[in-house]
Length: 382
Image (cartoon, rainbow, N blue to C red; front, top):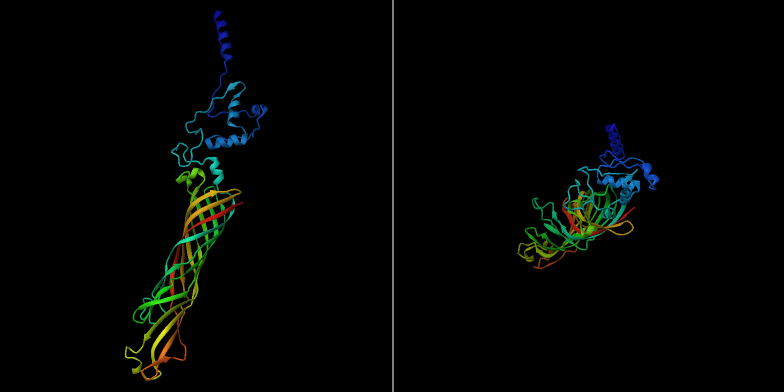
């Protein structure tokens, strides 16, 4: 009888103690939380990591402190899950040494402000800091190639005031990659003011006028943000990127004139007196009119820079760009005009009363164009 009374007392005491089986993750009772005044989306979201936890909290509109206040349902405390793969606390900054999250994350404030989103239009202006390339004679290796007056060996391109302009239309693929289609124009390049022109048995200095070079290119460009590799820059206000583009360039060189003002004796040093009257004794003031040309070429560019953000969806890219625009080439037509001197038969000579003009074809000059620019691009996002 005593044993039965003791057993009944023990069962009564044990039944009054609340027992529960802890789940792997906390289980919240949506109906109970709604009765307490919380607005809850009853759709279930599996909680597997920190990023999904943030999504769960956002969709249920419950702040962390509210979750703590609501951690007791029906008078029984909820015990937090103890999953060793679950990451708690704030996410590490880009470039930090924290690797327990499996990758490096952006802080939300930096991520939202500098992330690319949607369509954009861009306008850039730059300054050409280096021009590489020269015009050279395609006929340089041919026999008697330089016998035509006005032909030359080679000429380095000269950079006047080159301000490359670019217009682009593009869109962000995701927070790290964007793609655009651009139109890029270079102008203000020309021949150097002096070249080495042929004398028939050597070369001498001559002056050049004209020969302006223009390139209009269309390219498809891809840009990738690399701050997940470089880390946070300037407190998160700068986002570094790299880019590459490929397309077509339409390269044009205008007509130009090579002028050789030297006086060339054609009597082999014997003098006009040894030449019969009316025959050629010398030439001078040689003009070589080189017709320009246009070529369509494969072009590519490489770019690197940093992006910062301004108000109203405006972003600014500061960049360094290398552009290889392919080849520029003349049409191969060279017209030579020169002044001729004739013997008077009395030991003197006089200027011929006619114009002496020669036309040479398939005498091409060509060169490759490559540029290095620094510039700034404004991008307006929609």
